[in-house]
Amino acid sequence: MKTIIEPFRIKTVEPIRMTTVAERRELLQRVGWNLFGLHSDDVMIDLLTDSGTSAMSAEQWAAVMRGDESYAGSPSFYRFESAVRELMPFRHVIPTHQGRAAEAILFSIVGGPGKIVPSNTHFDTTRGNIEATGATALDLVIAEAHDPDNLHPFKGNLDLERLEALLKERGGAVPLVMLTITNNAGGGQPVSLANVRAVAELAHRYGKPLIIDACRFAENAYFIKCREPGQGERRVVEIVRDLFAVADGMTMSAKKDAFANIGGWLALNDDALAAAARNRLILTEGFPTYGGLAGRDLDAIAIGLHEIVDEQYLRYRLRTNEYIGERLIALGVPIVRPVGGHAVFVDARRFLPHVPPRQYPGQALAVALYEQGGIRSCEIGTVMFGLRPDGTEVEAPMDLVRLAMPRRVYTQSHADYIVEVFAELRERRDALAGYRIAWQPQRLRHFTARFEPLA
Ligand code: F0G
Image 1 (tube, protein in one colour):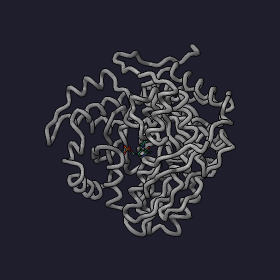
Image 2 (cartoon, protein in one colour):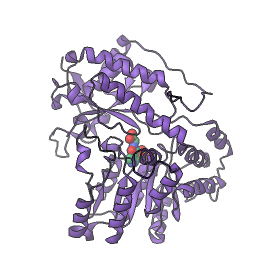
Image 3 (cartoon, rainbow, N blue to C red):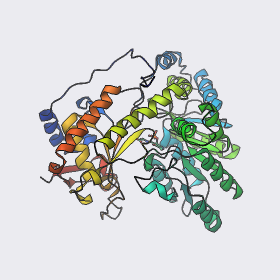
Image 4 (cartoon, rainbow, N blue to C red):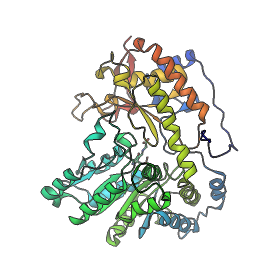
């Protein structure tokens, strides 16, 4: 059959409150045209993030009831640990309340002034946790990743030559090598199995561990199955195990590819490093058999990990974004191609060429999507990256708008609606004006800045 149906039925529903353009205009004014200021029940389709927004399954909710809340040695922990190890056979699995807590613990141990941590592209919390220790976070993604029209199948790959040059020249400063799968900051682009293996081989040759930031590992594995020569006949679980077999550890946000609403973990093979991490965990998160989570959360993750590697689910998951992407391209809306695993990234700078980067075309498009259709998205451009620590402003390399798809939440008619809203905006895009920033904080301004329309 041609139609890829949602591979689930809906048992519990949440109503969407329908709002009008006039209401949304008023709400926008009230929050200073910053979508982070909206109450989420004033949003009709929320594509702000795919993190923590998944719909849990009946099995996960059943597991929540099984959760054991003992402080130490809870069976929920052992179910969680064995579900992780089934896919990622690391010696030590250390639960945390979310991904960034795992990063903070890891880099509080191996970071520090003068250190350099390379990756394909660090996600902003990873970068933040590295830089907070005085270390440098270095992005070494392949050049193809910077061209939104380049159809390279693995635009998340790390540039091996640049990594080798770094290890040769500054190896003493590098505590570990990271890889983000999929590469969120680069558009949700996958890393090939060959690249993961080559990065591991190179890192090991220089005596460095490879740590995978694994938030969207299942989506990455399914891309490998679909695109990498020789992988098409293999089961996704086998590919997942291959990815982690060559690594020395991982950081994980269970809010993505574990279908959980909260949670994460740090996994390691090195005994001494794991012991140091557990000491730190007890200070900042909790005892090593719960690490900042309730037992019920650990059980939800254990089931989620089992469900996420289901190939029918993954086929539907990647198809959803591809479906929206194809239709946007047909409308002449420029997007980053190929479409990523968890999101469609719209190139707002090209969609609104009359709005210069310093007037925030990404913000203009994100606000228009909300005003026109009640859709909340996220600017990833000059608003997010344009303010330097010394207070000066620079243009971001691209002005994108991310439409991140929550897992198992929206149906095909929601997707069609999103495309329809874009069709409306395309008709009147010349009338969409830029913004100025009326107030901003000193750091991470995108969360709280207030804007004013320039028209
Ligand atoms: N690494 C990657 C690649 C991520 O995308 C995220 C979160 C994290 C680490 C941190 O995990 O949120 O559990 O602390 N990304 C979310 C997003 C916030 O919207 O892309 P966390």
